[in-house]
Figure 1: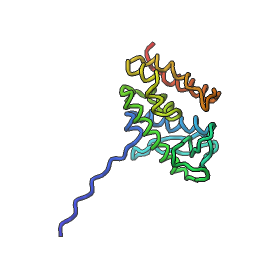
Figure 2: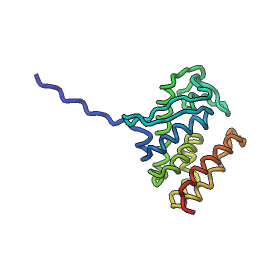
Figure 3: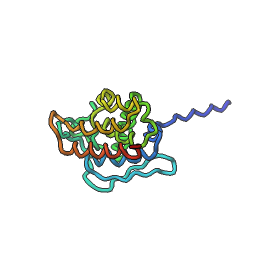
Figure 4: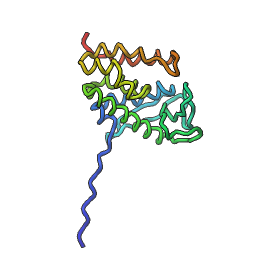
Length: 190
């Protein structure tokens, strides 16, 4: 009886692979929970190469809730059409969903701004922004226009403009955009 051929391994898509930077992936895994829900996590790289996220402090939102503008949201700001109030999640489910969402946002941004691939600080800043405002908003933005023209500093200077939610300026968004801009400008020539 012939031995069946082994099934080919399916490559698992990772945030680090999509961004071309483990450092960017680690930063996003810690930054997004801090920005979205205020919780602190530790992100480390396991021997397998997978990123492991561990809750450190702050409230964990393991039950779906309404965000600042009334959108049903899970875990650390995950707001998809599949989220329903009252649903509960495990920490592992939240981490898996966060990585899936960050990958989707990173891939969308890289499609419209190919030059961001491998640029650690700019990738961190723009994926964080896209996670918060959406890929389509980022792709239509002045940031994308400037970056696609190689004007990285000029694009970074547009981050503070994305401070509105529900038609009003939110102090938390003002502070978040300032932090993203600061990261964006790191290591860029003057």
